[in-house]
Image 1 (cartoon, one colour):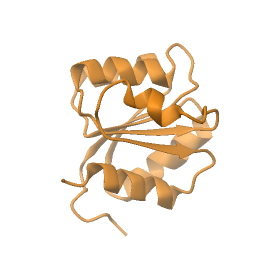
Image 2 (image 1 turned 135 degrees about the horizontal axis):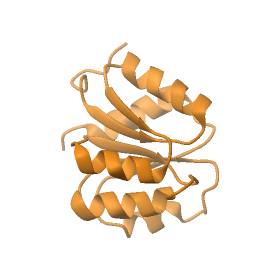
Image 3 (image 1 turned 60 degrees about the horizontal axis):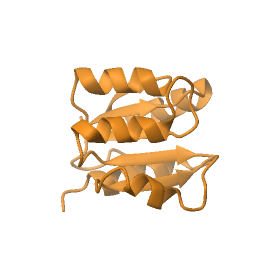
Image 4 (image 1 turned 90 degrees about the vertical axis):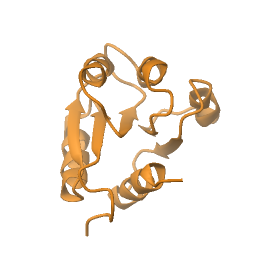
Length: 129
């Protein structure tokens, strides 16, 4: 079941857990998204600097650069980039903290999350206003 109107949207996924990353990439590609996988925040930042993306899907706890720093650095160049945060280690006020990075769209998902919820969240954040 492909999400209407979202096919071929470019998603940057920053996730250091190899099994979860593979599962998420397979699910997103199955929905028609173009996916670039980065295994840490620094790799994701480099990818974001070399091509345009429609959304960032990121973990918070990653090696070399954490997700919060990644979001701030990416949004410095693209303030309205939609971001979906996936994390198992989130403070209660995570959305407030991330919103301070800028005013771009944001959805927070707590791990473990269902792939259906992930797809719904991306659909929601990418939907035209």
